[in-house]
Length: 170
Image (tube, rainbow, N blue to C red; front, side, top):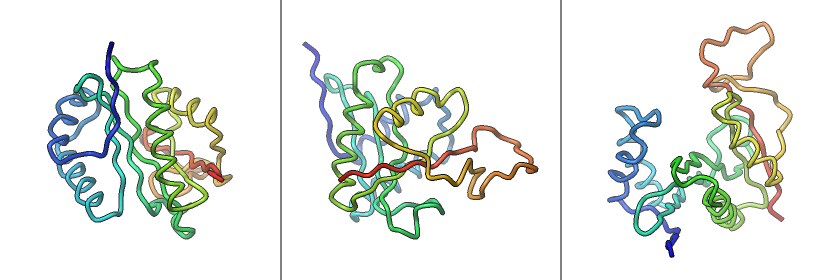
């Protein structure tokens, strides 16, 4: 029987994450980004939860204790970032359990949690997961980078379009 475990990220996980996700849009600066995530976790600014199946990296989720996005930053709401489950581990409930655990962590900080989800076809599974979990759009429409997308505006990269959502935890 396969053993699934969930735990906080350790520094040595950085190389495992980069190796496992190397085919998924990993860029040269990702090592620095994950090192920052770990350092911020050590300082109590971020929570990173790793999923492993029989010791093999399966996925992760990140909670920024105070939102970085413009929509929720002013209210100091925690923000879920970087939910990722490797393809071979999908459809096993790992993403759901990662979200359960990160929402539990967020609930210790606030009664609300937020996230941003992309609007391309690549993000469809995440969109469905978040809606099923009770996340609702905040009403500010789609965002392009750090600015609200305007009707007459030009979009050069649909991968940068984001819809912000939130969920009441209690």
